[in-house]
Image (tube, rainbow over all chains, first blue to last red; front, side, top):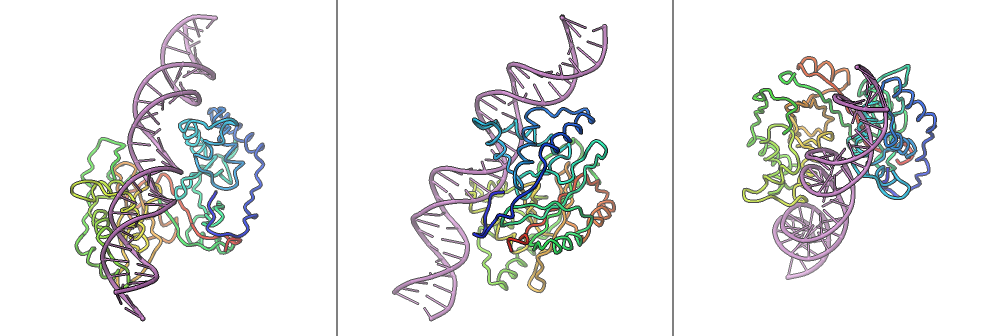
Length: 162
Length: 162
DNA sequence: AGTGGTTATGTTATTAAATAACACGGACGT
DNA sequence: ACGTCCGTGTTATTTAATAACATAACCACT
């Protein structure tokens, strides 16, 4: 979240996430799933939750310790874990990560397909629940977001590779 | 297009593009648009057309000259141009590029929103025309493609940044 | 408690991907 | 011919991600 294709005011770039509540929920979720929310994972999630918009891996690395930077593998491993748990999403077109807006919890496991509106200018991201591309246009319009390009990539296995 | 999460046959990984025809069409398109299809651009497009599936920038760089590699900026600039002309698409989740299946031509300019089915195993990509996410599932099913994850990212400008 | 398997982390080094900055050259209108 | 775009060549650097291997923590079983 640190590019500025413009010179105007970006004071709208503020998110209001209850970080502590999210961390506690994540802890409960991991416990229930038999996974461990270890120190580096917790710290990584905390940083992403606290960041205003999508966060680069190397920004996590830099801010990981109060004193110095963390080693890349430490953070990349934590990021993979958090992504698998559905706590964060990777934004492919930005090489960045953002906290899931509707993370799975103990009652409600749902590794969902998320869609994102990504502002070229302020760098903010908006996660929208959507089931159709027309929806994206609709929701974008409703939010006053001007769509310039949509990326749609489905990963999986082709017929002959299955 | 060079990962193999399996050991089985990949002989289905073959595309049949009439490279010469595409190059000629591209030349006509550029002429009509007042753009120049210069040598590095042509060479880059030729390599991507000839490649079997999405191609990495550094693979283009390596194969650019018969003798040695090209310099990265040469190729990255050409890639940007080709993408803007709608001749190739960037696959964000692979850091790779693939020739557009239905490129714009002199009669028919259409910078369209493409969707891709990307096989984890053979690396092949299938470009599908689609207007809804449900469509993706349908078309995937029809093609025998098992979808594991869908990335949807819309880039543009948010309300306050417009 | 001891032991062995599994999972996660620490650490060093390397590879891969992309861009910055600036100089040069060629096309084109006037 | 002249200036001005636009595109390229070139060097260097930045950014992003992973490989490989050693160490440590957790857990289940005896």
